[in-house]
Length: 66
Image 1: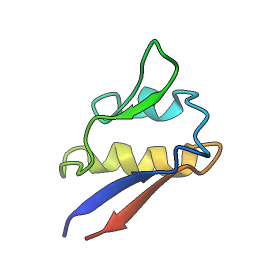
Image 2 (image 1 turned 60 degrees about the horizontal axis):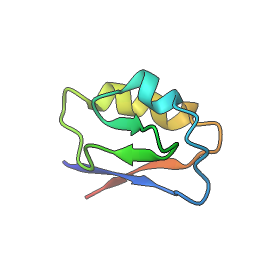
Image 3 (image 1 turned 120 degrees about the vertical axis):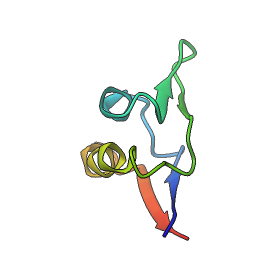
């Protein structure tokens, strides 16, 4: 079963909490915006992504089952 990461960029504050948890998936660049590096996280990345989703203060990150 595959999961896709969806980010509500209108709600995202680019505070970097997700990047601190999963830097191989999320990146806040010098321009101050969040970038999604892996739309479809690997099985190895899923535990960190699953931790990042509820820790987002604006609830801008979600996982969609595909």
